[in-house]
Amino acid sequence: MAGIEDTYIVHCAQTTCDMGMRASRIVLTKSHGVFLKGMAQMHVKDCKETENIICFGGCMSPENPKTVEAAKEVAREVAAETEMDFEEYVTDMFTQETEEGKKVMACFGECTPEIVSIKWDKEKEDVYVEPGNKALLGAATLTCKYGGIIEIVTTGQPEE
Image (cartoon, rainbow, N blue to C red):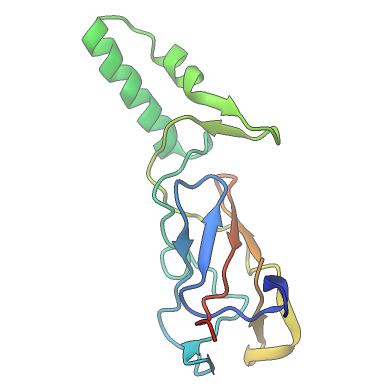
């Protein structure tokens, strides 16, 4: 049986972001006219934020201004309750480093993916879903402006 990296991706395949709070789904708002097991097949340029890539529930990237603002809001609330001003201290306290050396926040801000990649990085070289757009394969990744790596973790194809 083929691994996910050798399998075509269809509408509703599961995605994750290493800066996200939960898994999400890749979405195809309008079919390209090619179907696999009754599901619309995706190509490598189906990577537009809010259209194909949707919210991961929350974002813990310290590069996301909404996450930093969430940490500062907690600091403001604590300062208001305790009458102490330590916003920067609390903001720094929320920043942690992962085993891979990546900085993350210990709180979540609003997830609004901003994709910097122009296409997914895994494609079937000899299969086109539309002229000029190759078929998307599993385990493909994209990069978010805020440092998150978005990966396709299931194909979306119904089980046989």
